[in-house]
Length: 351
Image 1 (tube, helix red, strand yellow):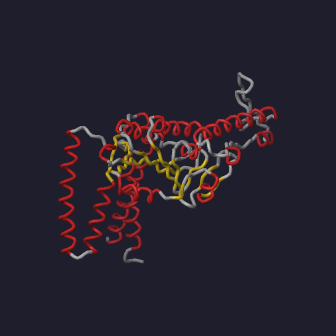
Image 2 (cartoon, helix red, strand yellow):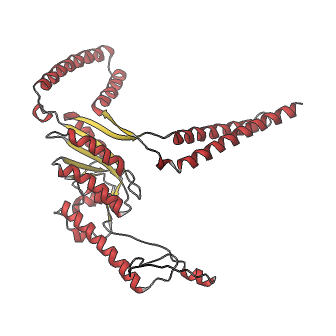
Protein backbone atom coordinates (compact mmCIF):
# COMPACT_ATOMS: atom_id res chain seq x y z
CA UNK A 1 0.00 0.00 0.00
CA UNK A 2 2.91 2.34 0.68
CA UNK A 3 4.05 2.02 -2.91
CA UNK A 4 0.53 2.75 -4.16
CA UNK A 5 0.40 5.86 -1.99
CA UNK A 6 3.81 7.04 -3.22
CA UNK A 7 2.78 6.41 -6.81
CA UNK A 8 -0.47 8.35 -6.30
CA UNK A 9 1.42 11.25 -4.77
CA UNK A 10 3.91 11.24 -7.62
CA UNK A 11 1.07 11.12 -10.17
CA UNK A 12 -0.72 14.06 -8.53
CA UNK A 13 2.44 16.17 -8.64
CA UNK A 14 3.05 15.26 -12.25
CA UNK A 15 -0.49 16.28 -13.19
CA UNK A 16 0.02 19.57 -11.38
CA UNK A 17 3.20 20.27 -13.35
CA UNK A 18 1.53 19.37 -16.64
CA UNK A 19 -1.40 21.65 -15.83
CA UNK A 20 0.99 24.47 -15.07
CA UNK A 21 2.77 23.90 -18.38
CA UNK A 22 -0.56 24.07 -20.18
CA UNK A 23 -1.26 27.37 -18.44
CA UNK A 24 2.08 28.71 -19.67
CA UNK A 25 1.25 27.58 -23.20
CA UNK A 26 -2.12 29.30 -23.01
CA UNK A 27 -0.46 32.43 -21.73
CA UNK A 28 2.08 32.41 -24.55
CA UNK A 29 -0.68 32.07 -27.14
CA UNK A 30 -2.49 34.99 -25.58
CA UNK A 31 0.71 37.02 -25.54
CA UNK A 32 1.07 36.56 -29.29
CA UNK A 33 -2.13 38.58 -29.63
CA UNK A 34 -1.39 41.18 -26.98
CA UNK A 35 -0.82 43.89 -29.57
CA UNK A 36 -4.54 43.84 -30.21
CA UNK A 37 -5.31 44.99 -26.69
CA UNK A 38 -4.95 48.60 -25.63
CA UNK A 39 -1.84 48.95 -23.53
CA UNK A 40 -1.76 51.87 -21.16
CA UNK A 41 1.29 53.22 -19.45
CA UNK A 42 2.32 55.99 -17.10
CA UNK A 43 5.31 58.14 -16.26
CA UNK A 44 7.29 57.36 -13.12
CA UNK A 45 9.73 59.90 -11.73
CA UNK A 46 12.27 59.44 -8.96
CA UNK A 47 14.35 62.18 -7.38
CA UNK A 48 17.86 60.78 -7.12
CA UNK A 49 18.95 63.40 -4.60
CA UNK A 50 16.57 61.84 -2.08
CA UNK A 51 17.79 58.34 -2.88
CA UNK A 52 21.40 59.44 -2.43
CA UNK A 53 20.49 61.06 0.87
CA UNK A 54 18.90 57.84 2.11
CA UNK A 55 21.96 55.80 1.16
CA UNK A 56 24.21 58.38 2.81
CA UNK A 57 22.16 58.23 6.00
CA UNK A 58 22.54 54.47 6.14
CA UNK A 59 26.30 54.70 5.64
CA UNK A 60 26.78 57.46 8.21
CA UNK A 61 24.60 55.64 10.74
CA UNK A 62 26.91 52.64 10.43
CA UNK A 63 30.21 54.54 10.37
CA UNK A 64 29.75 57.61 12.59
CA UNK A 65 29.42 57.84 16.34
CA UNK A 66 25.73 57.91 17.43
CA UNK A 67 26.03 61.40 18.95
CA UNK A 68 27.68 62.79 15.83
CA UNK A 69 25.10 61.21 13.56
CA UNK A 70 22.25 62.55 15.69
CA UNK A 71 23.69 66.06 15.51
CA UNK A 72 24.06 65.81 11.74
CA UNK A 73 20.43 64.75 11.38
CA UNK A 74 19.26 67.63 13.54
CA UNK A 75 21.26 70.15 11.51
CA UNK A 76 20.00 68.71 8.26
CA UNK A 77 16.37 68.82 9.35
CA UNK A 78 16.82 72.48 10.25
CA UNK A 79 18.35 73.17 6.83
CA UNK A 80 15.54 71.30 5.10
CA UNK A 81 12.94 73.44 6.85
CA UNK A 82 14.72 76.59 5.71
CA UNK A 83 14.87 75.23 2.16
CA UNK A 84 11.16 74.43 2.23
CA UNK A 85 10.34 77.97 3.38
CA UNK A 86 12.50 79.41 0.58
CA UNK A 87 10.81 77.14 -1.98
CA UNK A 88 7.39 78.29 -0.79
CA UNK A 89 8.50 81.89 -1.16
CA UNK A 90 9.83 81.23 -4.67
CA UNK A 91 6.55 79.64 -5.64
CA UNK A 92 4.67 82.65 -4.32
CA UNK A 93 6.92 85.01 -6.28
CA UNK A 94 6.70 82.75 -9.37
CA UNK A 95 10.47 82.41 -9.62
CA UNK A 96 11.95 79.81 -11.95
CA UNK A 97 14.68 77.28 -11.21
CA UNK A 98 17.21 79.30 -13.23
CA UNK A 99 16.54 82.39 -11.08
CA UNK A 100 17.17 80.50 -7.85
CA UNK A 101 20.36 78.87 -9.08
CA UNK A 102 19.11 75.29 -8.63
CA UNK A 103 18.65 73.79 -12.08
CA UNK A 104 17.43 70.29 -12.86
CA UNK A 105 18.75 67.27 -14.69
CA UNK A 106 16.30 64.76 -16.17
CA UNK A 107 17.66 61.26 -16.86
CA UNK A 108 16.21 59.03 -19.58
CA UNK A 109 17.33 55.55 -20.67
CA UNK A 110 17.39 53.89 -24.08
CA UNK A 111 18.29 50.20 -24.39
CA UNK A 112 18.20 49.52 -28.11
CA UNK A 113 17.46 46.34 -30.03
CA UNK A 114 17.53 45.78 -33.79
CA UNK A 115 14.08 47.39 -34.23
CA UNK A 116 14.71 50.30 -31.82
CA UNK A 117 11.64 49.11 -29.92
CA UNK A 118 12.37 51.45 -27.00
CA UNK A 119 11.54 54.46 -29.20
CA UNK A 120 7.90 54.48 -28.08
CA UNK A 121 8.91 54.77 -24.42
CA UNK A 122 11.47 57.44 -25.32
CA UNK A 123 8.77 59.41 -27.15
CA UNK A 124 6.51 59.35 -24.11
CA UNK A 125 9.31 60.41 -21.75
CA UNK A 126 10.41 63.31 -23.93
CA UNK A 127 6.80 64.46 -24.31
CA UNK A 128 6.48 64.46 -20.51
CA UNK A 129 9.74 66.31 -19.80
CA UNK A 130 9.86 68.95 -22.56
CA UNK A 131 6.98 71.11 -21.27
CA UNK A 132 8.60 71.19 -17.81
CA UNK A 133 12.03 72.39 -18.92
CA UNK A 134 13.24 75.77 -17.72
CA UNK A 135 16.32 77.76 -18.58
CA UNK A 136 19.43 75.94 -17.38
CA UNK A 137 17.81 72.51 -17.19
CA UNK A 138 19.41 69.56 -19.00
CA UNK A 139 18.47 66.08 -20.20
CA UNK A 140 20.82 63.10 -19.91
CA UNK A 141 20.18 60.06 -22.09
CA UNK A 142 21.95 56.87 -21.01
CA UNK A 143 22.23 55.14 -24.36
CA UNK A 144 23.10 51.52 -25.13
CA UNK A 145 22.63 50.21 -28.67
CA UNK A 146 24.57 48.28 -31.34
CA UNK A 147 22.26 49.68 -34.03
CA UNK A 148 19.61 48.12 -36.22
CA UNK A 149 16.97 49.07 -38.77
CA UNK A 150 17.49 52.46 -40.41
CA UNK A 151 13.90 53.67 -40.15
CA UNK A 152 13.63 52.62 -36.49
CA UNK A 153 16.77 54.45 -35.40
CA UNK A 154 15.99 57.36 -37.70
CA UNK A 155 12.78 57.90 -35.74
CA UNK A 156 14.59 57.50 -32.40
CA UNK A 157 17.13 60.16 -33.46
CA UNK A 158 14.28 62.43 -34.54
CA UNK A 159 12.77 62.12 -31.07
CA UNK A 160 16.05 63.39 -29.60
CA UNK A 161 16.03 66.25 -32.12
CA UNK A 162 12.86 67.46 -30.43
CA UNK A 163 15.01 68.23 -27.39
CA UNK A 164 17.72 70.20 -29.18
CA UNK A 165 15.22 71.92 -31.48
CA UNK A 166 13.48 73.20 -28.34
CA UNK A 167 16.76 74.82 -27.29
CA UNK A 168 17.39 72.44 -24.40
CA UNK A 169 20.77 70.93 -23.62
CA UNK A 170 21.13 67.21 -24.25
CA UNK A 171 23.97 64.99 -23.04
CA UNK A 172 24.29 61.39 -24.20
CA UNK A 173 26.26 58.95 -22.06
CA UNK A 174 27.59 55.72 -23.58
CA UNK A 175 28.84 53.22 -21.04
CA UNK A 176 29.04 50.20 -23.36
CA UNK A 177 28.07 50.69 -27.00
CA UNK A 178 26.53 53.23 -29.36
CA UNK A 179 27.27 51.96 -32.84
CA UNK A 180 25.60 52.46 -36.22
CA UNK A 181 22.01 53.51 -35.43
CA UNK A 182 23.08 53.95 -31.81
CA UNK A 183 25.62 56.57 -32.87
CA UNK A 184 23.02 58.15 -35.15
CA UNK A 185 21.09 58.85 -31.97
CA UNK A 186 24.12 59.94 -29.94
CA UNK A 187 25.35 62.51 -32.46
CA UNK A 188 22.22 64.62 -31.93
CA UNK A 189 23.45 65.66 -28.47
CA UNK A 190 25.51 68.80 -27.86
CA UNK A 191 27.64 66.73 -25.48
CA UNK A 192 28.62 63.04 -25.78
CA UNK A 193 30.47 61.28 -22.97
CA UNK A 194 31.71 57.69 -23.08
CA UNK A 195 33.44 55.15 -20.88
CA UNK A 196 37.05 54.41 -21.93
CA UNK A 197 36.17 51.03 -23.44
CA UNK A 198 32.75 51.89 -24.82
CA UNK A 199 32.32 51.04 -28.52
CA UNK A 200 31.31 53.86 -30.87
CA UNK A 201 31.10 54.58 -34.57
CA UNK A 202 30.20 51.99 -37.20
CA UNK A 203 28.89 54.77 -39.43
CA UNK A 204 27.99 52.49 -42.29
CA UNK A 205 25.13 50.47 -43.75
CA UNK A 206 24.92 46.68 -43.84
CA UNK A 207 22.60 44.29 -45.67
CA UNK A 208 22.98 40.55 -46.13
CA UNK A 209 20.76 37.68 -47.17
CA UNK A 210 21.23 34.06 -48.24
CA UNK A 211 20.17 32.81 -51.68
CA UNK A 212 18.73 29.31 -52.15
CA UNK A 213 18.35 29.41 -55.95
CA UNK A 214 20.97 26.76 -56.72
CA UNK A 215 19.61 24.48 -53.99
CA UNK A 216 16.13 24.71 -55.51
CA UNK A 217 17.54 24.02 -58.97
CA UNK A 218 19.32 20.94 -57.66
CA UNK A 219 15.99 19.52 -56.50
CA UNK A 220 14.10 20.64 -59.66
CA UNK A 221 12.02 23.21 -57.76
CA UNK A 222 10.87 26.26 -59.67
CA UNK A 223 10.43 29.61 -57.96
CA UNK A 224 8.62 32.51 -59.59
CA UNK A 225 8.71 36.09 -58.38
CA UNK A 226 6.33 38.47 -60.14
CA UNK A 227 6.77 42.22 -59.76
CA UNK A 228 5.49 45.40 -61.32
CA UNK A 229 8.29 47.94 -61.47
CA UNK A 230 11.84 47.32 -62.63
CA UNK A 231 13.39 47.56 -59.19
CA UNK A 232 10.51 46.41 -57.01
CA UNK A 233 12.71 43.50 -55.92
CA UNK A 234 16.43 43.77 -56.61
CA UNK A 235 17.68 40.75 -54.65
CA UNK A 236 15.67 37.73 -53.59
CA UNK A 237 16.09 34.73 -51.31
CA UNK A 238 14.88 32.09 -53.76
CA UNK A 239 15.11 33.54 -57.27
CA UNK A 240 18.17 33.97 -59.46
CA UNK A 241 19.88 37.25 -58.64
CA UNK A 242 21.28 39.31 -61.48
CA UNK A 243 24.23 41.69 -61.74
CA UNK A 244 21.82 44.51 -62.53
CA UNK A 245 19.84 43.76 -59.38
CA UNK A 246 23.02 43.70 -57.28
CA UNK A 247 24.15 47.03 -58.70
CA UNK A 248 20.83 48.63 -57.82
CA UNK A 249 20.90 47.13 -54.33
CA UNK A 250 24.39 48.51 -53.72
CA UNK A 251 23.28 51.87 -55.10
CA UNK A 252 20.46 51.95 -52.55
CA UNK A 253 22.92 51.10 -49.78
CA UNK A 254 25.20 53.94 -50.86
CA UNK A 255 22.25 56.34 -50.86
CA UNK A 256 21.35 55.31 -47.32
CA UNK A 257 24.99 55.65 -46.26
CA UNK A 258 25.09 59.14 -47.75
CA UNK A 259 22.04 60.17 -45.73
CA UNK A 260 23.63 58.73 -42.60
CA UNK A 261 26.86 60.65 -43.19
CA UNK A 262 24.98 63.88 -43.88
CA UNK A 263 22.99 63.51 -40.65
CA UNK A 264 26.12 62.97 -38.55
CA UNK A 265 27.97 65.83 -40.26
CA UNK A 266 25.02 68.17 -39.70
CA UNK A 267 24.93 67.42 -35.98
CA UNK A 268 28.70 67.31 -35.45
CA UNK A 269 30.15 69.73 -38.02
CA UNK A 270 33.66 69.63 -36.53
CA UNK A 271 33.91 65.90 -37.26
CA UNK A 272 35.92 64.71 -40.28
CA UNK A 273 33.04 62.69 -41.67
CA UNK A 274 34.99 61.01 -44.48
CA UNK A 275 37.52 59.74 -41.96
CA UNK A 276 34.98 58.20 -39.57
CA UNK A 277 32.21 57.08 -41.95
CA UNK A 278 34.02 53.92 -43.01
CA UNK A 279 31.99 51.48 -40.92
CA UNK A 280 34.83 51.16 -38.40
CA UNK A 281 34.39 51.22 -34.65
CA UNK A 282 36.48 52.97 -32.02
CA UNK A 283 36.83 52.54 -28.29
CA UNK A 284 36.11 55.54 -26.09
CA UNK A 285 39.71 56.66 -25.68
CA UNK A 286 40.32 56.81 -29.43
CA UNK A 287 36.83 58.19 -30.10
CA UNK A 288 37.72 61.32 -28.12
CA UNK A 289 40.79 61.93 -30.26
CA UNK A 290 38.87 61.82 -33.55
CA UNK A 291 35.88 63.79 -32.28
CA UNK A 292 33.21 61.10 -32.05
CA UNK A 293 32.76 61.93 -28.36
CA UNK A 294 33.57 64.98 -26.27
CA UNK A 295 34.87 63.49 -23.02
CA UNK A 296 35.72 60.27 -21.24
CA UNK A 297 33.30 59.79 -18.36
CA UNK A 298 30.83 57.17 -17.22
CA UNK A 299 27.18 58.04 -16.73
CA UNK A 300 27.56 57.29 -13.00
CA UNK A 301 30.37 59.82 -12.61
CA UNK A 302 28.40 62.44 -14.54
CA UNK A 303 25.28 61.96 -12.41
CA UNK A 304 27.34 62.02 -9.20
CA UNK A 305 28.72 65.43 -10.17
CA UNK A 306 25.29 66.79 -11.03
CA UNK A 307 23.79 65.71 -7.70
CA UNK A 308 25.91 68.28 -5.91
CA UNK A 309 24.50 71.25 -7.80
CA UNK A 310 21.20 70.15 -9.34
CA UNK A 311 17.95 68.43 -8.59
CA UNK A 312 18.25 65.18 -10.51
CA UNK A 313 15.20 63.23 -11.64
CA UNK A 314 15.07 59.79 -13.26
CA UNK A 315 12.11 59.58 -15.66
CA UNK A 316 10.67 56.33 -17.01
CA UNK A 317 7.61 55.47 -19.04
CA UNK A 318 6.21 52.24 -17.60
CA UNK A 319 3.77 50.24 -19.65
CA UNK A 320 1.08 48.37 -17.79
CA UNK A 321 1.33 44.60 -18.17
CA UNK A 322 -1.75 43.02 -19.69
CA UNK A 323 -3.34 40.10 -17.90
CA UNK A 324 -1.87 37.62 -20.38
CA UNK A 325 1.66 38.67 -19.39
CA UNK A 326 0.85 38.43 -15.69
CA UNK A 327 -0.65 34.98 -16.24
CA UNK A 328 2.37 33.85 -18.21
CA UNK A 329 4.77 35.03 -15.50
CA UNK A 330 2.70 33.36 -12.76
CA UNK A 331 2.47 30.11 -14.72
CA UNK A 332 6.20 30.16 -15.41
CA UNK A 333 6.89 30.48 -11.70
CA UNK A 334 4.47 27.65 -10.92
CA UNK A 335 6.19 25.36 -13.43
CA UNK A 336 9.60 26.12 -11.96
CA UNK A 337 8.41 25.45 -8.42
CA UNK A 338 6.59 22.25 -9.50
CA UNK A 339 9.61 20.86 -11.31
CA UNK A 340 11.83 21.69 -8.34
CA UNK A 341 9.50 19.87 -5.91
CA UNK A 342 9.23 16.91 -8.26
CA UNK A 343 13.00 16.71 -8.53
CA UNK A 344 13.36 16.95 -4.75
CA UNK A 345 10.73 14.21 -4.21
CA UNK A 346 12.39 11.85 -6.65
CA UNK A 347 15.73 12.33 -4.95
CA UNK A 348 14.06 12.01 -1.49
CA UNK A 349 15.08 9.37 1.07
CA UNK A 350 15.62 6.76 -1.65
CA UNK A 351 18.71 8.45 -3.10
